[in-house]
Image 1 (cartoon, rainbow, N blue to C red):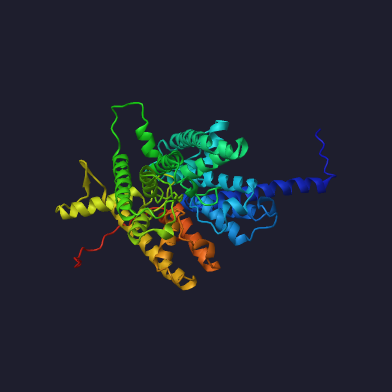
Image 2 (cartoon, one colour):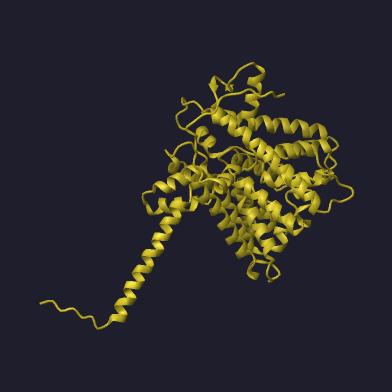
Length: 476
């Protein structure tokens, strides 16, 4: 005979209640996961990372003075680091101690490679099978058309980023170790390598790279890291394929052509417009001027490092810089902005129209109409967003009498392009101004489509099952 002891009813009730509570929490988590689309998870993931970083940076243990940092400034620093921008209301070298700078470096790395890097690394280390929902998130994070190979590409991204950043850290340490000592020099080398590759622009030197105007080695290493980070991981995958006979994809061809065209074009314009080299210190040679001019063409590609004072730049140089900042880097990279491929698709479409063609054609290939429409939409929305931000900031901020609207426009395009270059407005921003710039940095990093889909829809393509009659509209 089986005897059941039901004397301890309180303990039994407690265990059953605990089980029910866990089941409820699990069901709530499952429901929440089902309700959120992939783009919403990405958008919220960046927000959570930003607020976590902001909360940490407010703690007294991370500031040099040992006092708490105002939350708005800590949050601004966290947004700038996660969105790999470099605009700061506080001087990174003077305000934060080594621990605070380490937190900023980690935020830059996670933000630059994408917060999805962490779970992918966990799956890889534990050798667990990746779930379908994670594959969908990876597809959105890497801006891919399908899920095939998304996990392998992310592992490739992590490995490639580690190799490039470690190489950059070693090269920069050659300069920094003799200058600052082993401990500080190695940390400086690693920090600036990560910041350069992730196109963040944060520096621990106090005045970016202006002390190294006459040091081509540092400028060229940082410039190479910026370009490598801004090219995009899909482009690198194409470039480093073992099979030499395999042709590059159209995306890689367009990205490479556009990137090097902008670099060469920017170099020529800056060489002509900044010919007086008034920004360079005494003792710099003509070769130094060439290197600094090249660096001026590289850094607006969402990097944020500078070797000259932009307050002394000519108007033509400022306009060129704003143009380069707006375009930014390549899709699927650590860079922000409109993106080189988006800009190239618009140019290809315009050229095709003037040739009398109805389709966008380039190098024997036809670009899909959906891609062209997406590029046009991005161009219109992002430009409108920047113009509205300039209008708002012109109301909320104080513009120096010696400066014009370019003082604000420069900062707006720098924030949207996640560049980090400044003419001095950011440290003087009002509370509302800080909010506007933070939103621009967030949208510039996450992407206007991701933000739009996460707010307005569930991020899924919804095509109507019916079509209205066609009718012509006069344009032009």
